[in-house]
Image 1 (cartoon, rainbow, N blue to C red):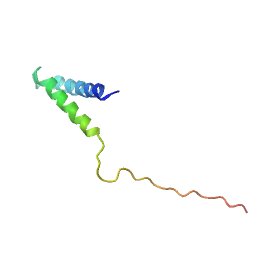
Image 2: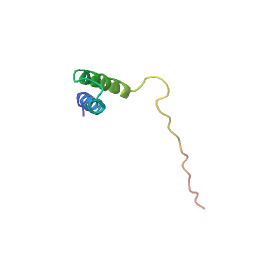
Image 3: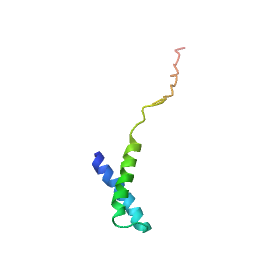
Image 4: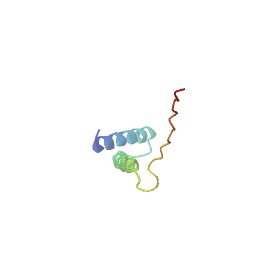
Length: 66
């Protein structure tokens, strides 16, 4: 799924919520839905600050030949 498809999907879910709520006009809903979709795509981008990942290192136990 590319970013345009994902943007449309995010906007679709936002529009469904606003339509069910009934507080917005037909002209406002698509504009607001795509603003929310753009914000959601922006939130998915990785941040370039801080520690990216911390991986726990486990010690491998060795069997001794006795």
